[in-house]
Length: 533
Image (cartoon, rainbow, N blue to C red; front, side, top):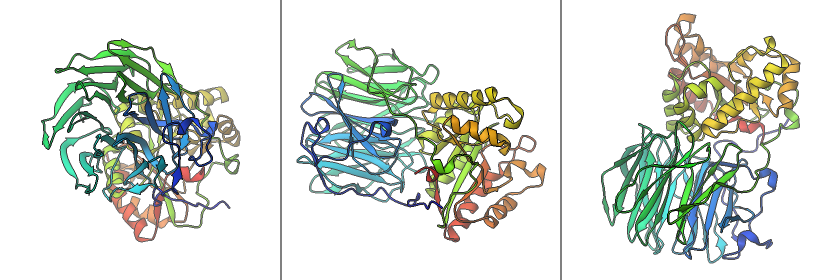
């Protein structure tokens, strides 16, 4: 029996001190450099962090790979270096900025806190936890030439907060920015002592606020419509700013520039699966984001001249099905440790999503959501909120049919169409996690799913909250049923939708007490990635 060696309670583990040459580190094969990622591991996820070199000659890009490690590349004159693996384990994307000439990388660790790794005099220091504030999405960072760094985060109530690192003084306390955000923020230094933050608000428009010295402006709406985090680049010499977004309707990249006043939104092209990262250096504003092929694509503006969309490297394949999971519909994580995986199916409506997400964020509990293709097409806002908040996403078919009643050809189409729909809407790679609708399958269905790169995952206990009060259930019954079934490695099935007859959301109502009850019994929580790591 394979044992789990790391759970959701594990933090982003500091790496040992690693030496690296100051400038050409990413292009060399120095044995002192951090481990380089193999091609099959180099699958980018989430919005990358992009920072312009202080020299103006190029850009550094930090991103989370599908392994959860932070990878680091340099982008110079349209060419990408080979990656360095900065190790660590992140939920969501990474942020990178230069401060006092040194690169600083930030991310949300698997403990839900903000972590930092800095390179000083060519040597990468260990990962360090900034503090104990729980955050709910990727951070943003804006570094100053004097070594100060402003970081921006979204807390577990979806409120934006900021704090500043000052050399010789350390970190300030957190300052609330009076904004409830749907996405991660982005930030850039725009001049001496000046910084601008942008974020997508609850209205799906882009909002911005600036700080000059210690004085903050009011929030201003830049309009547009997006479900993803925006990107921002700024020329500190002129104060010019570019804000990039993935449009909600077309999924194409758009940009709006500030040159003393804001111009209009312009269409740049491309088809993106999440928002882009961006930065300015050497007279160029560059954006980097994932296309529908899973690769990073870049576009550069020099003056008023744009390049076409340019693909970076070809990413490796998604993770394969572990041999230990082949031929099975898994109903339990193989472990003797007290760990539970909370899973939620999303099919017919989204009535419980807001409550469920709020509870999971507040309690700092990871979870896995199995999405139906129809769900992501009907509820793109919720689909992006779940993925952007770092929850693991699985495939639950395209239209939720009974797989025992459809042909193999139809079954394949159900799986592949759902994967495409989910990836195109929120950028989440579902492989290798699949759940059969109704839990109905045959042995040949399992073989078919394995051939498509999926391991079917069932459940240890069905809460039955989906039956609603009209089906004789109550929140108390749901709580009691789940807690009575507790066992190491348990997989709990719940649903995000309301019962169609009585409109109750019993799983959402019961969730806080389920989490408390399991914790009181000594349980911690994990996503279903515990099956494949």
